[in-house]
Length: 631
Image (cartoon, rainbow, N blue to C red; front, top):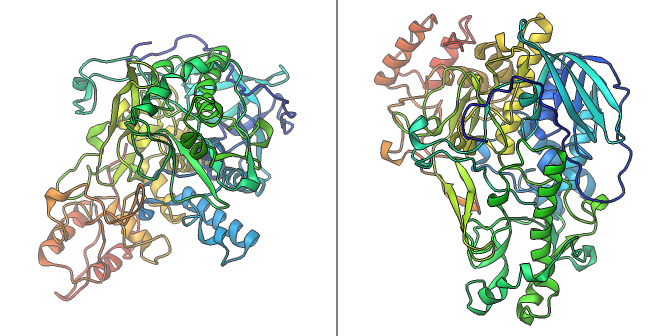
């Protein structure tokens, strides 16, 4: 499949994978057979849950269809070190999740317990806690139903009305069901519903001249970013289980590791936090509560958990192909751990170190301590009404990234790719296409959610972006923000009985700000501040771009604050509202000009007026949601 726009003209038939070979509990069917809903969300990922909660907030009937055993996506399957740079970049549904997690640990263990104090403000929870939190959240809404272990079989659209009409879904028992809905949200990692509905999508990498991206390869490729499991291990001997020998294990696949150990090119099985190319597994710090660690691929390492060289057929693969790739990743990653912990040819010191960390007895209990899902970093990418690219995260004028008049979300992580191909042997070779780029916080426009072909479908996860642009969006906190925005647009569309794609960014943003969800990064005005709404509204029309009193020179754009630990930092400099400062004459002139262009009445003020006073006077004069460009 080429890295080009692929529009499916026929019904794409797909049955997503169910993974490990073990006893399968009955699927939760929720009385959904052959029924109609206001909204159907395909994919019980964090973004899907955010979308379902928002779209059902006013009582609309919502169905979540999830192919796997349980909801929560990767946050319920080992990705417990959420990818963000600063706490100031967390907002909306994801921030609500962290508050629920903090409450869980306080209630379960006590407010001064190690667990309550050691969950990194609710962003680092055990996978079982994430899962329980998501399930409890959904259970609060009786109008939201969930079907697990149920996958997409086909989709039928009406091209004349530009609508997705109904889907055929198939339960794990082989029962086919027809589901109708007024509105649809594809929150799957692979974009299965979007593709089955005939929407255009890309797979692979664009060439550098396609969108003028410096991080793109010279020539387009069919390669997707590598996948791996996010294992969760513990050094608490009371909660350890032995690593299972994976089906099809062959020690000869791993003996090349012995030469790397002998030559000291690999000198430790586990590294912490920042990563070390001489290690195999990255057990990330700070640890999770209860002495657990989220294990990830070592960036630029000599031995990798991710296998980009075999992942290319996953995005559009059928159930059999995804099962095959799942098992191959399982043999590689679990096989590596089994080998270094058990093979007598591994030096004693190395085996002893490897056995300090083992799988958790109380995590993934249905699947012998192994996550139910593979970490699919990148699948299909929709070709929608706005294609998010590297240019959208680059520095604009001043310290901020490009201004997005149609923004409905924000992010602060930056393009991040674990490699799209591999040179040399699997053990000891080197990934290609790997990059990790710093950038300032950025805004995300509503067009990334909207397909070109249909009006009643929104796509917050396999959203519209180039490969490089997608690598800045593919993080769960950002996906949850996009899911929340999709849910808001859909809820409004249900209420108005119109197509979701007709709901513009201004309308969505107004509801998001009321819900304390930010759409522009302002580090000194949190969602708890009484000025949150006016600051977000002003920033949404460009009020804080080109700020003349920025405390940092423009050539430091993208510079992070002080490091806290690992990948986490203090707030980005130069992204403040500084409401208590006196409004400078230069800024006042620019703000007054901007207000007049937006049809906002400008107040008469003295020279001593503060920035906050001016904003409160201006935006509380009957126009709390300034007009802006619509997309």
